[in-house]
Image (cartoon, rainbow, N blue to C red; front, side):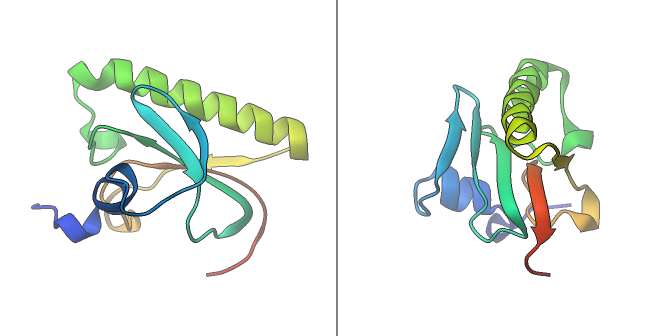
Length: 114
């Protein structure tokens, strides 16, 4: 499958600086930010700065990046859990993945849009 550049909002817009986001946490290899069009009352997205298609395409040489991704997810989720008492962490694969760049959602609260 060839990935169309328009399918990667995170590389083309967020990481390039074309679309400004409200940063939650920024490390060498990972960016966490408030979703630009949130589905939940509190909705943060965590992405690797390197283009990785999805969790099922991770290569052995990307495992250190993944450790950093999970460290950021843990920190964001811990803060959200402390503030609200709960949160969800999820990722999508294949046709469920609207943006063809691995990303993780950390969210809390009611769904505010479909």
